[in-house]
Amino acid sequence: MTEESSGTLKDLQNIDLLLEQIKSRVAEYDPLLAEVEEPALALEQEVATLKGRLQEVQVEERRLEHSADDRRSRSKMIQERLKSVRNLREEAAVRAEMDLLKMALEGDEHEALTLLDQIRKMEDRLNEQQSALEEARTAVEPRRLQLVEEKEKTLQEFALLEEKRKTFAFQVPPRDLQNYERIRSGGRSVAVAALTPDGACGHCFGMVPLQIQNEILKGAVSIACEVCGVLLSAGDDAP
Image (cartoon, rainbow, N blue to C red; front, side):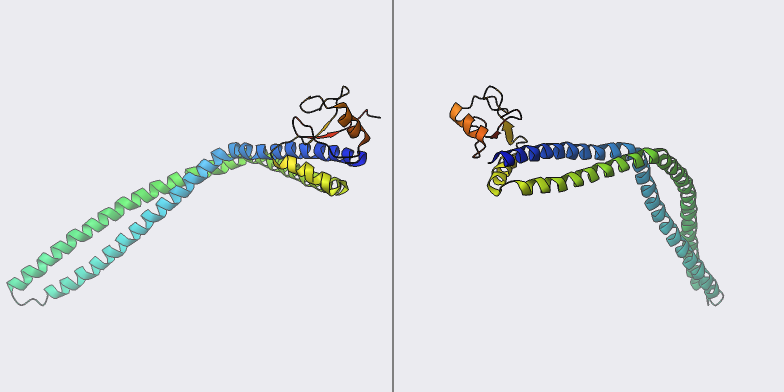
């Protein structure tokens, strides 16, 4: 690892550390947005549930109306049959059928009226919740837009920094970059550390043998700390 590539690796690491910070900032926006949107989302879910239930009740009410219409048509037909009965037995049978049909019709009409009352109350409730939802959306919209804008700017900052990282990574010799990426792929943020003025690893502060210190200061080869494994580089004040 040459002195130039060593400096580049340190710069690359600074960029990676900054990328981690920005990524962490981006992740913080989602729970903030969820918290801001929670009241409106709860109302939105209630409105959706009410709409679904209202639709079900309306379908059932229409079914009862159709059933009642059919029973009324059958009642008229039975009344016509009553005019042509030939004896008391036939008349009694027809009237019994009419009575049963009348009871069924009254049941349908009563149930339909009950459902119509439910529909009216549900529509009133739905209108109230929709108004509350609009108010909630209006109340949170400025804060929500602010968070969305801030998140978008942070993502743009992240994207620009990623492009900058590509430029720095391209300047690093493949072998050094491979060693650097290998260390970071193990979940470690610090892959490069400078020697301290007294010759210790700047990451774990383990002492580095004098001969290895000299090699690092010359920047001739890529050397890892024997204690913590990070790549060692000369300090910024090195000659």
